[in-house]
Structure formats: structure tokens, C-alpha cells
Figure 1 (cartoon, one colour):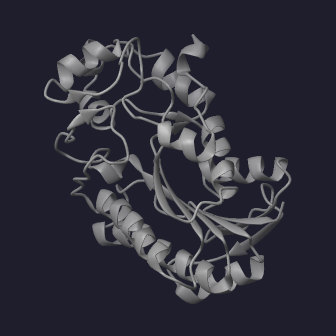
Figure 2 (spheres, rainbow, N blue to C red):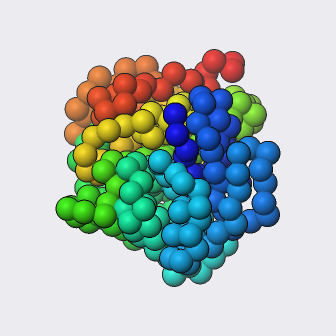
Length: 295
């Protein structure tokens, strides 16, 4: 099965990825800058992911066959903009460069919904058509969104190289990742109608993320499948649950909030506004967990 190095393995999603990969038979190495924690992995290497030498040294020591790069700032609120951008862009460059020179075949990158120009944007998201897919234009303006877009552009560049590059690079555009407790508190115990979201002043955030989310169980399954992928090049892949986080049916959400967007698919019931068919084609993956199962 080989060895997978996971950067940012101390984080909530990182811990879940390490545990899932370990349960699937992989040897795992947590590469993080925080306090050593080997309870979720077979080994731990303290590493500053913004230091090219440390990244190279830790990946070499890990003897990894694949890398999952999650070790970036999860939100932009606590750091200056340049630090946020640096975390996304430069750490990715260091990981891809080291992986290529060390002969690591597969790298999975944590991109984000914010790459499209949503998420933390102060203005409304630009939506040309629904559901959005990987061909939709990107219009980020914040340091976080620009960093995620740049991360993907860096991966494009490495994929064009003829040598010293990972063969398979996947940028997974994650939405907000929830577990059962988070989903119950945020979705089940709250009024998730459009009127309810307006009343709590959370509609802007939900609109700017197209009411997307994903459960950690589906996320770790997709990460493992991307680690096992063998395509040649770099692919961007959207990640989403099969439904929205709204109680209001999807057609009513679109009519109210995205009246100018072209509708390209059946949006009956609570169908998600993000198209995950590319993940199905590349990895034979489909999301299965819905917050509505908790009701």
C-alpha cells in the first residue's frame, strides 16, 4: 500500500484523513509545524511548510509514495493578507517541487470553494450557470481566494514539466467540511429556510458558498481515491454533498438568489448547486452523506 505523507495532519480534517488512510493499510506520516502528535499517524515530522529546505528534508525522510497537502491556513481572519496568500501558494510550490525531485508520483492539494470567488468574499459571488463545474470562471479578490486560485495555477505549471514532477496532481475544491455534531448544530437545530437565514444575517455567507458542505466521511474517502489515482497531469475537482444545506428547495433558492444564472441540470428537491460528476469520472466517487439523515 505504501506511505502517504499528510501535511497539516494536526488539523481536524487532517486527523480524519490520517486515520482513514491508516485504517486502509497505508503507512502515514504527519508533516506539521505544531506540537508533535503521533496518535493519528505512524510518524510525525515537525516542519515549517514555508521553508523549502524543511519541506524537502521531511518528504525525503518520510519516504512517501504520495503526499496530501492540507497544511495551509484554513481561514483568512487571523493573519495578514500576504501571510494567508503565502500559506496557500508558497507551501504548495515547495511541496510540489520537493515531491517532483524526490520521485513522489501523486500529490493531492487542498484547494477550496473560495477559488471560484465565493466563500470569504465581501461582495456577492459571480454565478454564470448552475450547477457550477470545473469550467466555471474564477473571480476571487481576497488573499485567501487568490491564494487558492494560484495554488491551482502552480499545479498546472508543474504538470507541464517533462521531468521532476509528480505524475498525478489533484486539486480538491473543498467546501465547509462537517462532522455529525457540527451538522446537527448548524443545520438541524437552525432555521435553514431562506427567511430564517435572512433573519440571522447568515444568508450572504450561504449564498456565497452556494449552500455547499461535505461530510468528513465523504471527504476522506475522496482523498484516499485521489491518492490512488493514476492519471497524468493536474485536475481540478469540485467536492460537495449531494444536497444543499438549505431547507428551501433548490429551484426556489435559484429563483430567489440566482435569477440570472443559466440552469443546466435538473435542480429538483434539494439538489446541490455544485456538480461533482468529474469526481465520479476520475475516482468513481459519489457523496453519500446528507445532514437530512440526522433529522
